[in-house]
Image 1 (cartoon, helix red, strand yellow):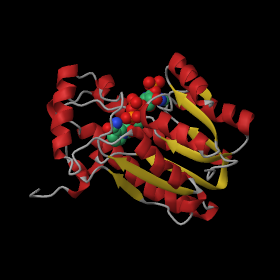
Image 2 (tube, rainbow, N blue to C red):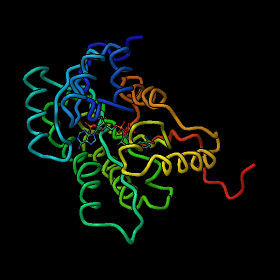
Image 3 (cartoon, rainbow, N blue to C red):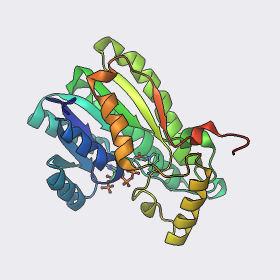
Image 4 (cartoon, rainbow, N blue to C red):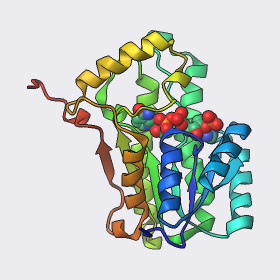
Length: 252
Ligand SMILES: NC(=O)c1ccc[n+]([C@@H]2O[C@H](COP(=O)([O-])OP(=O)(O)OC[C@H]3O[C@@H](n4cnc5c(N)ncnc54)[C@H](OP(=O)(O)O)[C@@H]3O)[C@@H](O)[C@H]2O)c1
């Protein structure tokens, strides 16, 4: 398959999970790929495994984003696919939300995503595809996820406005809302392993298809949206969640 032949793609947070799988899928489909992440060793190792270019850049830092864009511009010129995927998940009940808890998730998941798109705009080709990795959490009201969920809801709203503004350049902007996907995001959340396991099996029971998703499945949808096959799709949100968003009052 070669639906991304000749395209230059940037994947933020490409050293693990969904970003890594998307980078792998993009490359398998013919794209030249740049991945980012915060951890230099992990970025270098993943880039070498994938056959991608790795650039260390914190999505929450506007200076890092400037550096990233200038490096990509110098090395590759223009960009055709921007997958704004980097994100963190830190659960806390409303009464325990601290300023740091609020800022860290908003800075990376929302502010960082907004400025990633803004700063890449001058080097996005007309007709480029931007995919923002959001979450069904934007809609589910799941306990302990108030700030994470709000960061993703804000990202979905931003996606729609950006899609309108960039349509004259035929730049498409879409969002993907995964349900639970087995990645390192949960072990990085600060929760103890037993809590993660308990929470994972409870969550799985709530998914109508009774399964977590895989990074590779999400990557396939992202690669489709990245490709010219999706030329008529912009400002859209895709739930890929095993049915979580259906939220039935009664299940079977
Ligand atoms: N897994 C799920 O169940 C699920 C469900 C819905 C949505 N999502 C979303 O999917 C996206 C990817 O998450 P994942 O599940 O694949 O988790 P993951 O395996 O932890 O991957 C997250 C990636 O983002 C990078 N990252 C985090 N903060 C960053 C920052 N400030 N700057 C640059 N890179 C940063 C990480 O790199 P470093 O390690 O170097 O920081 C890593 O490469 C996130 O936006 C998440 O909210 C995940």
